Image 1 (cartoon, rainbow, N blue to C red):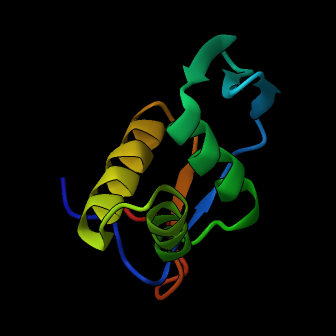
Image 2 (image 1 turned 180 degrees about the vertical axis):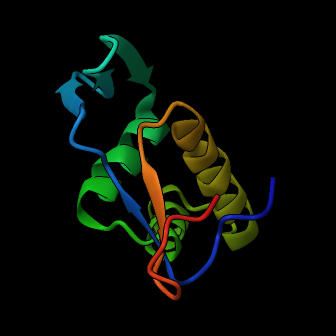
Amino acid sequence: MGKITRALTTLTIPEYVSWYALDDCVVVVDLRNHRRFTLNDTAASLWRWLDHEPAMADLSHRLCTEYRVSAPIAAKDTEDFVRLLQQERLVYIFDDETRTLPR
């Protein structure tokens, strides 16, 4: 699978995905099949930011700033997290250059 971290890549949460905060974590629910995903503190932060800052580059930068990790580590962690979300169909990855959903 190709690299998904690009400056012009935006993430969108589908309408069939709901979520709620529970203490320090976030629970994401796929309403199509009622599967629940509990996110740890760092993943929960990324999810909350995703709701307001859907650009991959912004998420990576904020992770770098908030958690004081290097830019390469923040970029890789963000990409790994988004890839997992994509595999579970909990986010759509939208390529702003081509106005399409990358495969």
